Structure formats: structure tokens, C-alpha cells
Image: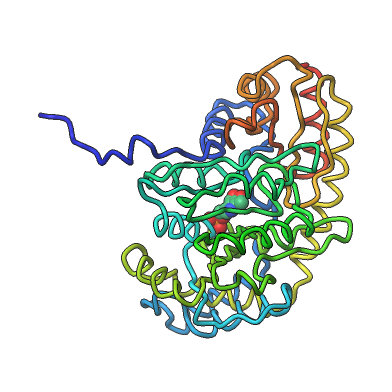
Length: 389
Ligand code: PLP
């Protein structure tokens, strides 16, 4: 039989290596090895009970059918109220499109703007799906370098110097995966000011870690900027804030002119999000917030532990992560490449992490540690790595 002929984009599609690391760690565990997983980016807490109960009730109440493709109205209203509460911005619930996970908003945004001849600027090191999907779309992926010396922020001047008439979309992510970096307000102010000269450029702001900020920092949302409000796509969701990664619940807030197009993509792709999960999503946003707040307090404690301990490892230096639940130490002092160190830490020390190069070429020399794990496990992992080094 002749081989199947795939669309050219398939050869350009990348992946998220964290899932490969998870599979490898699982295989080692199945062989009886004791593995500490600091590789996967998901909270180690259970979804709060009130949210689980809301989903069970929704199923018992008969919410088992299709819903409107953009999500049920009370959920979109709850999202709008949440944005007013945490970001101080009024949005129209009709601009909210609920999708199966945070990832789907980036998938739709990149499909909407990416094609041969277009350019999309994305953070590097950054969430690997940005680069993968841009390449898949045929657009030119233009890396926005993030700098360790500025807490892994971008430089607005550097980003603006990369904008060309072909630039259609700029992707931002703060607080960030994999660096834990948070972009200071002044840098965002400067970027927005500069973008006023480029009215064709849309910004997709991935704010999925917006509730995970430390030392009293306040989240800066791109939606706060009136001058570009009609070309900002906000990406957020339930996965990280409410420990709901497996529920597949996310949303985009789209400019009015684009919301129907995003909904049309949803109709072509997923029809709607699981109906019972949508009811759980309402409870998450409108119910008590003490469980998510407790999770962030626990992450903060572990953040301090991991930062101190990583800085004591020979060849490692780690700046303070300001948000999310990742530490991104510089490991160039070990003289070992990020990829080799990742493999050796997993195979020889039983500690799963992700090499910085999984997040783009500018991640060489770094390793991502997720501290969504217990303090005891974090401390034991560092002891094992110290022995290895
Ligand atoms: N955006 C960033 C920056 C992430 O780190 C992740 C998940 O790790 C996502 C989006 C995707 O989230 P979800 O699991 O809700 O699709």
C-alpha cells in the first residue's frame, strides 16, 4: 500500500515535552523505581469539594446534552463578574467563549491569524504550544526573548523592534510558564503605547496563572488597556486556579468582532464544553475562594524552599520566581546541557523535571522545576540531585 500523504503542516507540528517526561517517569515507576515528579505543570491538590458536588448535581439535574457552543449564559456571566472582580474591567459576557481548556483559546487564536506570509511573535522560552501551533499554521514564528536578568520579562523596545507589517499577533504570558517570571507594569505600558502605532496587531494575553502571584504582587491584565481593548484576546481558565486540569475548562475573552469567529471554530471543533463541567465552573468562580487561596499559600512556601535549595546545588543559580509554580534555574555552571541533565536527573536520580530547551531554543542552560509537589518531596528531590552532581 502507498504511504498516506499527510498535510504539510503535520511535519511542522511540535509537542509539549512535559507529557513525554510524564510518560517516561510513569514507565520507570512501573519498573518499581521511586520517582519524584517535578516535571508536570499541574496543582497537586484535589478539585475543591464544592466544585465536584456542583458537577454531580448538574448531572443529576439532567444537564447531559449539548449547550450553546460558546458556553451556558450563567457561566459566561460568572466569567465576566470574575474579570470585574479580579481585573477591575467590565467585559460583555457575549465576548466570552468557553472552551475545553486554556490551550484551546491559543489554538483558535493562532488558527485565526496564522498562515504563510504572516508573522506571530511569541515568548521564548515559553509554553511550547505557541511555537508549535504557529509553525503548523505556516506563519513565521518570531521569538520574543525573555531575559533572566530582568526576572524573565520581555523588553518592550525589543518586542516593538520585531514588529513588521506582516505581524498579526503577539502572544504574551505573565505570570509565565516555564520561568515563573512576571512582566512589570512599566514594560507592558511601554509595549501598549508602542502598539498604538501598529493597529493591525492583535495581542493574545495568556493569563492562566493570574491568581498565582507572590510577595503582594498585583496582576496586570492586558484587558486594562483601553487603547487596545478592541484587539486583546484574554486566555484564562480553571485548570490551574482551581486544580481542574483534567476537567478541560478554559475561556477566551475575545474582541466583539472576533467572538463569533471563535465560536464558529468551537462549533467546527468541539461543539461545546462538557455540560456538567460548565456548572462546576460556575461554582468555582462564584463559590468560596478559600481553597484556591490556600493552594497559593502552599505554593508560596514551597517556592521559598525550592529557591533556597536550588541555589545551594553546585552549578545552579535560581532567581526568585514571582508567579505561577515553576522555578527556572540557570544550570550552565554544571557544564551539562539542559537535555542531558534532565535525562540524568530522571534516570539516575529519579527526579522528573523538564529541560529548558523544551520551551524553545532560548531555554538552553535552564531546567524547569514545577514545585506543585510536597515540601518533603521537593527537599528529597534536591538531595538526590546533589548526590548526582
Ligand atoms: N497556558 C500556559 C502558559 C500553560 O502553562 C498551560 C498549561 O500548562 C496552558 C496555557 C494550558 O492550560 P489547559 O490545561 O487549561 O489547557
